[in-house]
Amino acid sequence: MKVLLISAAFPPMRAGEADHTLNLARQLGQRGLDVHVLTTKGHEQSVGEPFTVYPLLSDWSWSDSPRLATFVKRCSPDVVFLIYIGWIYHEHPMMTFAPTICRALVPRARFVTLFEYPHGCNPGRWSVFSRGVRRVVQYWAGQKDIDYEFGSLLRDSDAVIVLSNSHRDQLAKRWEKVHSKCVLVPPPPLLRMSPDNEGASRRGTREKLGLGQKDFLVAYFGYIYPSKGVETLFKAFQMVSNQRSNVRLILIGGILDREYPEHPSYARDLRELPDQLGIQKNLIWIGEYATDSDEGSRFLRAADTCVFSADPGVFLNNSSFAAAAAHGLPIIATKASMLEEPFLDRENVLLCPPKSPDSMAAAIMAIMDDPHLRSRLQQGALALASEWYSWEKAMDRIILTFGKA
Image 1: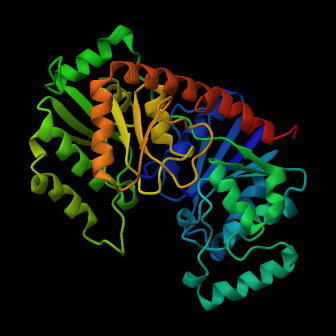
Image 2 (image 1 turned 180 degrees about the vertical axis):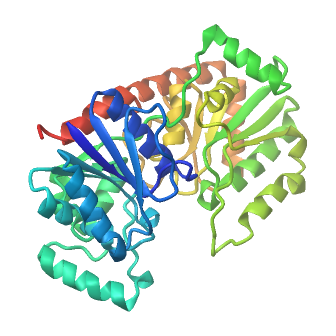
């Protein structure tokens, strides 16, 4: 089966979408599929990977549509697999009509869209020319069931993969019939797992970090940006460290270098906050780790608990959560307004309200003080990872959407 995987995000781009695309291509290739990745100019070629990369497109606007069409026609895939979230395509409408374009070029090909998040194009950013072309393309595609933000993606995709039930519900508000073609596939860990070696990896990494046997290591794992609630975690950690002398906090993951209009000084302010709170001496800031090694996994094995402090709460689409669960860590996470069914408080995750340093501090100390709670959360996390965050099960679900092309 020949699969054309399309994504504007690919390494060395620093984004979860790029990491996800790389791992999807790798896993599909290892399953024996003939995988071709169409991505943005300047992105990496594949070396020693079971797929081929074509970094051919510039800005994914209407001016790139002839190049897209030419490549799709020449590739002649059995399946077109689109990774979509508006921002990686500069919130331009061209790719929201990709299934209709591909269907016209290769009628026999099946088109599957994976939504990284239900965020489409942004009409407010379009030029007059882009608006005009979009009207023409919409007329060509057929006016019925075309969404202003998602174009024909919902209507003309043969299958839609969502990473969270909340994403499915948001898309269904745009087009109710999407329920019938949705498949839930949360992202598995997007890092290379290190061998446990009966605790040798943990012991060795803790020794390199200068941690004693009785030191309790709290981990944050993942990219850092404003909605991740790291400020809440810092304040909670201050409360804990004021009462416990043996606690340390490790941050595994760097701050994404993007513009944040509502908080332009975010990166600087966040880096200054530990000094202001007096926690700098107990903080281990790893920043970026080598994604082509098991370094990130080794840091997770060194931890005693992992905290996810995101302001919106925890959802199934959080691949960093998947990584912590796969390592069998007791996990603390903020509770979303609509909690998804797989998350069970005090069974596979310890939940606390978002933006509440007091509650987060209490949760950390509960895990420190209660070995039975720690053990239960560890076993629950591993069970959750086995059911929802397994690459084997994820690829089974994805390949089923490809049909018998």
